[in-house]
Image (cartoon, rainbow, N blue to C red):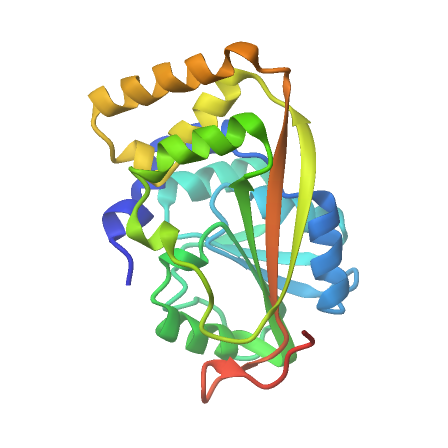
Length: 247
């Protein structure tokens, strides 16, 4: 299990997280809905929903959402932004939903924080037969000149869980990119909403802020943000693994 100090640090920057974090690429969200065979009215659990960045994109597409988020401050922002969505306090390792109650589960920017064996068992428990999971990550695009350099700066303060590659099951993956007009100040605020930054010393934060400003001196005003999507076809509660995958 990852260090809870990092996993739970986002509550201290909930409003900043809401302001700074970009939504996921629309094409990525559309693809996961198609890959999971979802339709308007499908019941979807957005697990570790934070301030509801992914939740709102799914709501716009007519899905019936329930959001589960452990952080009180993060959940308060979600409830303010999406008052029509059922928002529950809870964690991936003890999901506060009945057995076989959702058609799909989405996890945005959070699966690496879970105790994966326990969480996968819980996810399988609440899924209806044939239900599956979609994991999403927005990342600093390594093909974008500025964001790739920012990513290199942040790597040294990134917690170990955020460096982990691969997943303990078969999955189908896709990568999507979105171009967004973004100022250097917005990039700094995005960086400041990450767990490594939040847990860094004030001196280190000032140092990173100055380095990002220096890197951004010739910034053209637009950046490329990558969204990675991993779709798991069908979880098995007994094995916390895979019945089948469409790779």
